[in-house]
Image (cartoon, rainbow, N blue to C red; front, side, top):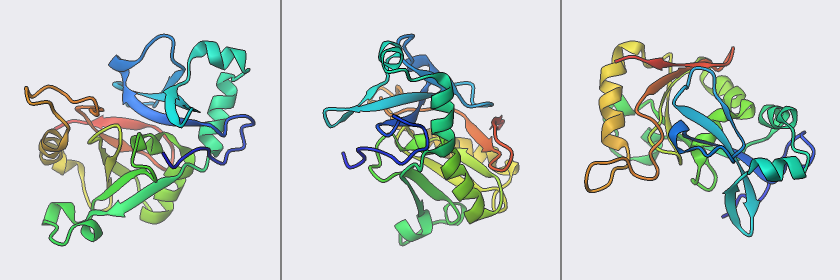
Length: 199
């Protein structure tokens, strides 16, 4: 693991990162929050412990005085170590529909979908694209980002098919441990919030 700490204005939060996980996988003992409009996905907070990221437990948060307000300030100010890669640059031959898509993750490419939970990253994406985005949540480690000015909601059925093809699955066709969601989201980078795109 490369990411050991992050730059943040929230005191004492340098060893905590947000990750996105399916709501069904949350434990009541974990510290988590929600993204408005992404009802099947939650923000789980992870803390660095012995060179591995572990879920932040409510007991530990209370013991160290980590308040909900501090977590909100952390999400608003952390300079999340994100990585944005154009599929066009990553693959020599990139078919038409993929050419304007981007892979969003973190510098470790581990729990990288959490970049979407961070205001710093969302501000950077808005500066890069100048518009809102459509998100294909391929796994908890990465998501595909589609600038709204190059893709429209008319593509929803095709994008859902793509999501089902790209999602990690077991040999039995069940969701793999890296699975995040069966929905595609429209994310409002300018005003905040998200909504599910219907196919």
